View 1 (cartoon, protein in one colour):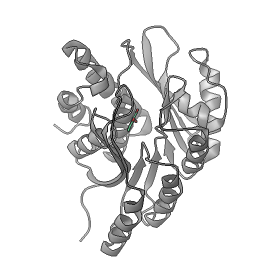
View 2 (cartoon, protein in one colour):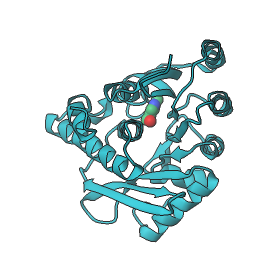
View 3 (spheres, helix red, strand yellow):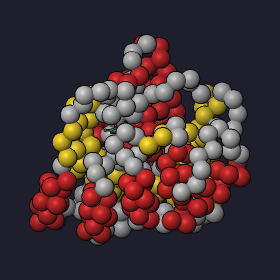
Length: 284
Ligand code: PXL
């Protein structure tokens, strides 16, 4: 029977506490009507940013048997979406999964979740970043922040010292790796404003969306942004519309968290912002 709903296979870790990766991707995508098939890469008691003593179980060995079962069932998908991976071995494994589930010409979105603010996350090294470049090469859309973009391209991290020409050149270089669409997050040209830039190679078009900048570091917001971007695209929005919808949703969740004065390492209150997201998608 033909599927009515869009389906995504998302591949990232489960951080049990701390609202990031699968614990934000699944609720956001599901709430917007997208059937979400999950492939957990690892299970951690918390994410690795701002907590010590976390547990980590690598699920590399489970990935192939899970996918083999799905193949037996004839599972097809409209999109594949990867985020934080458990190990470098998983990069090649996932590249194979992209090929195995390519029947419907799915959107392949790689969020190279590995670094922020000029630094790799604690679990990763430069070799992992090299491997991520190979995975991005297979994507149709990639969503790095500026730190991740520099690691993918092996260029120096500029901090805040860049201009529009640098952003556009960087997005073109990322697209030259493979993806026809690139969204760069954490872009700012003006004090007090922060947002995202997009490049669509097929249209040869750049676009931008900015909101107010809220000072502070908020865990999981990259994953919230990527999940919302994909949710908007799978709900028929254009890339230009989707980058704005994802910016507004992410900043809305940050605003709620600041107002509630909760600890940022526990993630942001995106749950109470979901009604606003549905409205911006025209869903209620
Ligand atoms: O993408 C954020 C993220 C996801 N998963 C784990 C993390 C982080 C960021 O630190 O540690 C386990």
